[in-house]
Amino acid sequence: MKLRKTLQHIVPYSPGTLKEGAIKLASNENPLGPSPRAVARLKEMATTISLYPDAGVLRLRDAVAKKLGVERENLIFGNGSDEVLCLITGAYIEEGDNTVTSEHTFSEYTFATVLFGGKVKYAPMQDGRFDLENILALVDSRTKIVFLCNPNNPTGTSFGEGEFRAFMERIPSSVLVVSDEAYREYVERPDFPDTLRMIPKYPNLVVLRTFSKIYGLAGLRVGYGIGNREVIADFYKTKTPFNVNLLAQEAALAALEDEEFVKLSIENNRKGKEYLYREFDRLGLRYYPSDANFVCVHVGKDSMEVFKAIMELGVTIRPLRSFQLNEWIRVTVGTEEQNRKFVNCLEKVLEG
Image 1 (cartoon, rainbow, N blue to C red):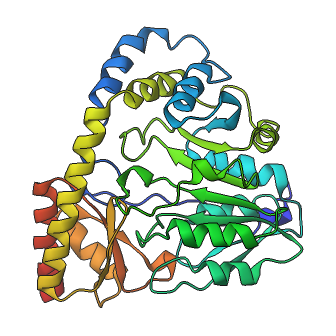
Image 2 (cartoon, rainbow, N blue to C red):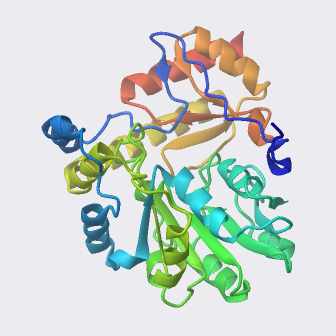
């Protein structure tokens, strides 16, 4: 069998290793676990798994539409936002087309593009932030999609509404702009773009959100896209039936109602970041103030070596060599106890 040309240089995703009993601060999961309401709903629904799920995800679509102030037709759900990205590129990318994004960002944009024969152009960052001027400079006649990660993974930085509106005014209307907002619920800056209100003016804007982060449902895989109904309709042409399983839909419905859990998660994250900032300052380490639930910190050593040494001490973090940030690591904000253990381990490793 001959592999498709477009797949010959793709390196399959390699999951990180986790030492038994180690604290995992590597994947930006919610350290408080899942929403308790979601857990209760899963227990109630356990005996229904012989049934196929709702192929249209109608109840969840309606609930999210009501919460966000949009219509059902403005939404598409996937097996995580990763799948939604592939639905988008599958709808629009043909061989020879390109997408534009930034260096040092989420690798799934590259995978979703190359999978369908496209090429990716990477714009330089400015101090760990997406530089929208640099993004615009790379757009050409074969550009189909621009991917923006806001806040950015792995740096945690973001851009504001004024900057984004100016960008949308200048980007060609034929280019789809995907604003990936997986960490939106953690953002506290007052001028963060209100992208949902921008969609009626900019039909070439699609926003991605997820239940994996603040709602604590990463293991169930529920992500979604919001956009102009005609654009969203295009993505349904690339979607398989039953792509969001029954338990995932039910858990997401329950989690969506659990506002108290969201508030607790935001407060834990705020306190955890403040603690990490103080400790990084004490250790003389440079970091990017984060609008997400993780912090990107410069450790001054090869990140893989730091990763291995910290893992031996019982904590797993994310080395950023694969993001071309060789001396940086990304640590998820954990519980108070987890954060303290991480700092103690990091200090030992850096002193060694």
